[in-house]
Image (cartoon, rainbow, N blue to C red; front, side, top):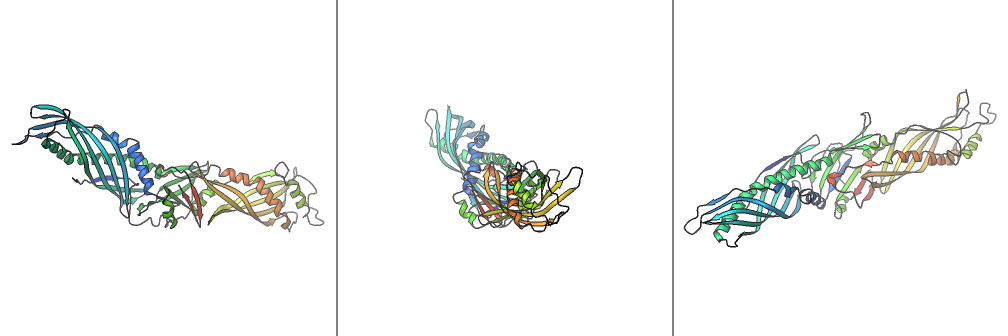
Length: 467
């Protein structure tokens, strides 16, 4: 028997499916979730955590009363209630452009008191039920959607109805079974409604999250538009707002776009694919790599090439320079200028970063003499990995380009200083950069899908994380 019932749910995202993907919204992160992962998430929340069984407890059905007839015995069944639900299984099917079909199979054990004719007996019932719902979403607005769960119906399988004495007429068997098939859908579908609302609250909390970016600020992930179901995945775009402590937002212009064709292939043996756009990653890096200027003495204790650098600079003094200091301790100041730029290319990630290098002498009670003021353009190699639900970055210095900005002592040619400054930056500034990003760039724990057995692939302008 098939009974139709409309159940309205609001704010639930996991089951949504629309005909078109997100358009025109800022989205730093997109994900594709496989049917296998959705089924696992739903099974964990509804079945394994006991949520469905908990809300089925105490299910009471209406009494049955039959006056009988010429060939049947008057029958009264009272106190018909669920004693146990067991052997539940859950499966899902994606409905491209529409949404999701959720199918739950469960066995119900019921018990009741009966009066059949003049005989008082206890009735035991075991019934297999398949509950099916189609679920879709509408009306996305401000990070939320309205979701309707409709076409909820039940299909009944094997049924065993018996008395404690073991004797049960066919007429009473049919009477009880017909009563169950007529009334159970109207009771089970509302229970599923309640269960799905609870699951929605749990899963929505993983989609709309604010995560710390070290001590510098936060990143706010939330749904950027209505999700899309294809024949192979549930697709979602997330807004990603980077905000520093104090409230200033670090802008980026990452817009939702179609995911690369390889995503479908990656999902065959995976749970989820996350794609992070280059501009969004740059907004997080701009915040994380806000480093105060670093000043230190040019001594071997500070970096190993201090003496060589000092001798090389001294050798560049112009002949006959009267203002050039003959001796004295050198100091070095490194200051980042502008924002770092992360570049993603196939199988390669680099960061371009500019710093000012100041080499100076500060005499007691005297002015600062700038021996050199240089601009250094750094190209950093980046190693990417995932740890503790964060994208981890490790920098190493690839190459540098030096530009002489000024010199108080008339130095004009710095071409021979490049090896010494490369060593200086590698030993003194790279540890500061790596320390600044040691906490990593946080990822949302979407639908509580664990980030395990991860692969990281780098495409042009896109970082792909496969779980």
